Image 1 (cartoon, rainbow, N blue to C red):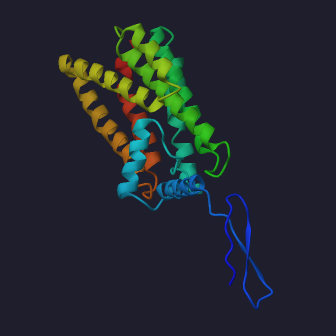
Image 2: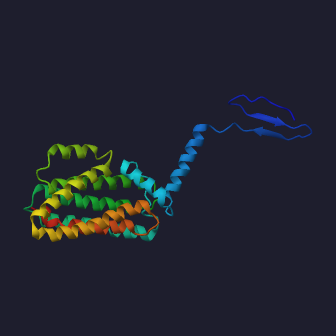
Image 3: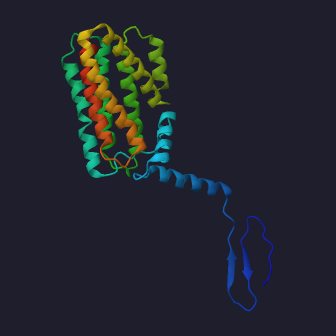
Length: 253
């Protein structure tokens, strides 16, 4: 067998004595391509709708850090239908609030409009299949709408909230909508808790809100941890809408 020296960037031919067949020697695969391939395979594993455990924790970590993986909540047609139908209550609540809030504050009207926007964005996001090229853009829109609703709700629940906080939240919204929504949610819940502490009549309503809201949060987190469990996203839709409706009387002032 003849030995040939290999020159980088060229294709060598290996000839065996007594054979008329030329065997081409392929150029070794680029290291960067190999790393990219491994990363791609990792993402595919994390996208699997039959994986939980450590993969689920990784998905949740990426969600918190603002770099979520593509959605797994619309993996079947029936699940898409459930998610679309359960997006409608947000729009119904918002439209009903707008109709009945002619004398309400501007922040309440803004909150009601944000409810309609969040429901509409969710409806648009869940309608196409996961394979549709427009899905990632619609998911980003959905996250932006949720973040905007968080800002509007916090502003409505905390009239004394500094305008600088609202402006800073709006500036951060395109970059980390999940973080913006979470931070403003904490401010909103603090306002509800303070109101419940000094108002026995609101306390029972707040307890219902807290229970249903906990179910919503559990479904939201559970979807990332155990994406194979069906209808967790639809559950989070329904529970979140009910939780918001529970405290509507407090927000409308």
